[in-house]
Image 1: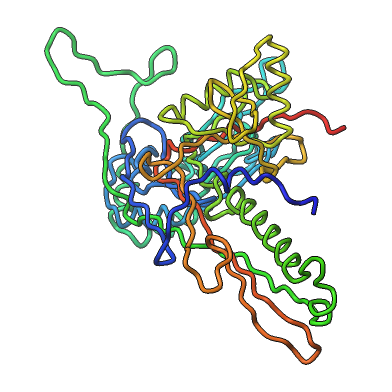
Image 2 (image 1 turned 135 degrees about the vertical axis):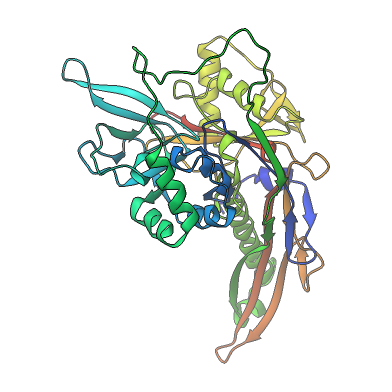
Length: 434
């Protein structure tokens, strides 16, 4: 069976018994108020803005009604964009506010000599179009285009007005913001700053709000199942020299384990690629994975990094970059295997990490174990008719056509205990397919 792989992820993850079918992770919620950037909560592939972080938008600065802000945060819609996609186009009405959860965007407009010019860069935590919530109707003076894969949250001005019509406190706050006199501008076009010199004072510092997450994440065990059907004639007549039912079950279990590893990497709810915190994702500097990029990952998971996980082609691309730069990292020996490594941290191959149509992939670095507040696998052992930990084979029936049926089930999930336990290097170019 050619589809059987080494399945290093299943071997390396420390597996935690999940007796009640769910595993709760209580984290502290921490974000910075007044830093000019919006922060988010991530659950798998789903991203939500922290309600109080909406106070970074000028029109909502100083507004503190948490119930209204929570309602407003729930009205944002998540959108995904690929490199090159246009998010807003010049000349269209400004009727939406956009929060950049992850990715890199460029503001593109007409240059000094009539050509296209990049007017600015937007990245994680940036926002644009906020004046749609309070200003008069006008058009975009520039376009915004995705440079990398991007995740944004959008809110139509009409949905904001619907909420303001129902919430008197929000309506009064927006009215007061509109009526606030504009500050004088300096010769450079900047707002004048009121200064006082020669006295002792205390500057206003950004404040940090720390609390437990209001809705702790609970990871429920996922299941992969199939029904194996074998004719009794095959089992009776052809089970020598090898037991046909046993061999059929063996290959079925192998296929389920392969699917299990695929889900642990790619599932939108608990897959590691989707559960990496947005602040724990970095892009390559030049395309192919370089030693500098791997060092950048190590700065994100610097506390007891356990291993890198990469597609075999990404590992080959990293090897080419090392050779090009004259760097020859020492391999490490693990369970009798000689594996490539960087800074002494082994790099394991995993063919479940996807390769995009543009020949890019990802590299993960993780810390593992409950005691290290790392990444753990979740399973339930002690199942009826269990043949492997977390995997059971149950005889179901023999139907009227003399076909035996076996239900094969595997239960599993994975949890990232704290955000800095997992980091992802994205947009890794692996070269042209041969």
